[in-house]
Image 1 (cartoon, rainbow, N blue to C red):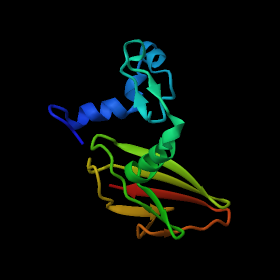
Image 2 (image 1 turned 90 degrees about the horizontal axis):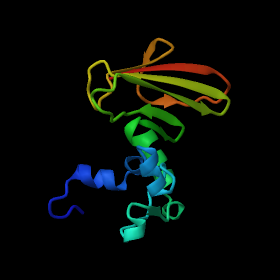
Image 3 (image 1 turned 45 degrees about the vertical axis):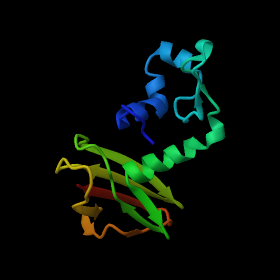
Image 4 (image 1 turned 45 degrees about the horizontal axis):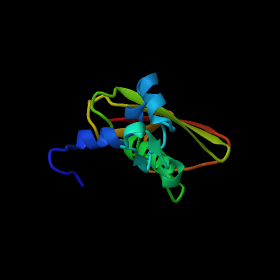
Amino acid sequence: MLKNGENAVQWYKMINPIEHTKTKEEANKYKVEPYVISADIYGAQNLVGQGGWTWYTGSSSWYYIAGIEYILGLRINNNILSIKPCIPKNWDKYSIQYKYGESIYNIKVNNISKVSTGVRRVLIDGVEVENKILLDGSGKIFNIDVEM
């Protein structure tokens, strides 16, 4: 919960490990992995800014889920793949390579409309399909284009 005078950006910067490791000096002070959320960021004089209890939190798995599922939008449910991005409007495009069984899914997302969410259409090898792709692990290569 945010307290008096705090805003979401300040809170985000406090818990986001990348914000503590932007320079070599900051990384040396933080002293823990920049890809895991610390359970503690110390405030005692000789430890100010140092992170602690990183792997104890299990945060790396939650970061992975947040990044892959809730930002890039790669969702798998009952062997059905769908793409539901939630990205900054200024992202032009990104790509994901996903392996399922012996198959490779090359996914390219193009943000033509400069939006944060909303898929306009999905194509597999140039053919428009529904945004519910049944996964096939037989060793094929699938090229998926997603337009926002």
